[in-house]
Length: 431
Image (cartoon, rainbow, N blue to C red; front, top):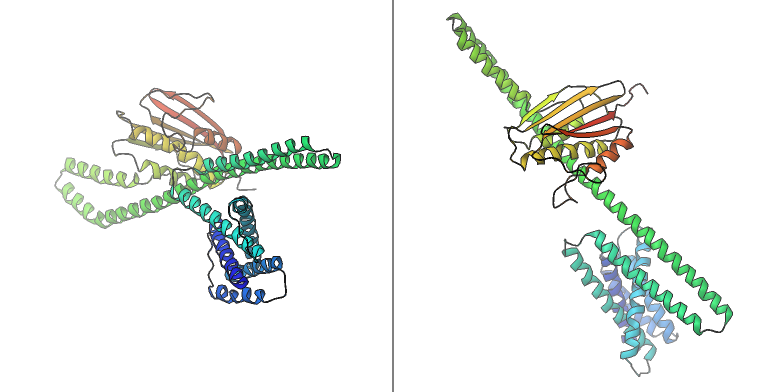
């Protein structure tokens, strides 16, 4: 009978570890052979001359060893994962074991083994509930990770504050001075734990938001680069077509001029030049590859009726990271393009003017606006979008990014145009 109970402990605890690893690390036990080999060990433990509590501990150690052998990965990585899973299961056992002790009572010669199995079964039920909660959270994409962080933080802090309150109440019932001092030390430890937990969670939240912004920026950079190469291929293809037909064009012009048809020749030349201009305007160039990539990505979204003007072309390398360049120009051009696309603006236009100095280059970017810009409390343009969180990267981030790189950000609205002036440092190539 005892051997069957030990085998039950082995099976239930192995199930708990497998589920715990799946909850924490999305890891499943791969090598099934060790699980069945390990099933022999509880039988051997059952016939050993060890008391009931010792046999329970030995079975638990066997489960840990089997789990270690069946999980894939490096030794250190497997060890850390199993330790964290063990801590999770211990917490679950502490929560559910009390319920089992109060409501499920067995009177048997193998009471110690049965109680141990009972606790493991409760841990299994608790782990199953945790797994179901996790699955629902993963499926519900509407739940933002920041909300989950605050929710979990609230539960942990509430639990710790409850323990702190209970400990302080217990102190009033104690007469032993030394034990009261020990309780005071525990108070301090719990308060420090709450403080460190809050700091850690805030750090995780800020890191997550920063990584989200970087991920969006990186995704935009990749999309812009794909668009960049598509535009270049399109321009190259159309240029080849014109080169191929150029001899025919010249032959036709020669025949027309021989017949003194100057007006027809003039119109024909204008048509040819118009075609060249269309090819030239397929891709706009300012002199910086990253700026050109971002700019063409967004300007390509505009309808052909929008007047686009680019003045100035200076091959410059900006003294900042590509991520920062993308943050700055993606936001500016995105806002400009969305303003024109989403509003019925007559004779809409986007104008870019580049001026180069010795240490800085200035980008003046203007776009038509439908109504006057709303100014926020920080003195910057305020988005009127309902989805403000996902609308652009934000003028605040643009200003902070430019100033962090020792540049300058200015903006104004005048005569139906919104204008930003970006003064950015040039990399010193002689350094």
